[in-house]
Image (cartoon, rainbow, N blue to C red; front, side, top):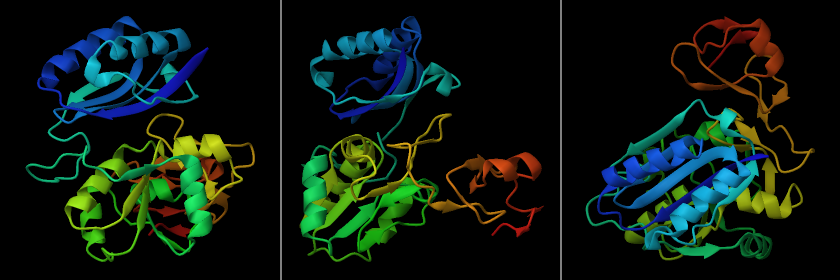
Length: 285
């Protein structure tokens, strides 16, 4: 049996380059594939492989005090959902250009899936900020009266969005597995926001707890060959094919610019996957 894990840990890593070498050796020995980011701020990754090998990986990290007790999000998938193992060292664990002295461990209060659900039920007027890129939120999002889905292509583009938000109102923020929204919540508090909460475990944990019976609607975009995950067989298709206008959750990369396009499977088979050429029923915008 194979699985995929999603995880992160904000902690102080004095020698990210040494951690990268250790991770390459460990994952290679366990035949794991996926992507890992290492920084002085910690580690963030998603890996696929055999269940017993992923458990061995978890045990290895638990032997390091700074990495002990990480919350791993498990989902269906395999090593084949990744082209290779990639381990990179970055200046920031999440690319936000937060500035000198920023510590993501100074983050906001984490709400468990149940606390998040109950908060939204009791406070429907709350500002809810999606911390993901626009092509991710096209496939699924939380149903809320004041949902903010920024039309951003990269995470650091979210900073100007914050300028338009009131700092004296509660803000709930979420993302796929919690790393971006926790990072963002720390940045928001440093910018003077008074009351910020982030979804502990992200969409993945909430979806596993509530399926399609809560506030989450649609499918969750993931950064591997699966492209998306649903939390029940009845998960709705919320996006619209750019060619035929039918509801879909299928996406494809533009053959030229690599932009993520919402194009259903049928149209992918019979048309260009290209954002600058006419497709079956018109021109992509």
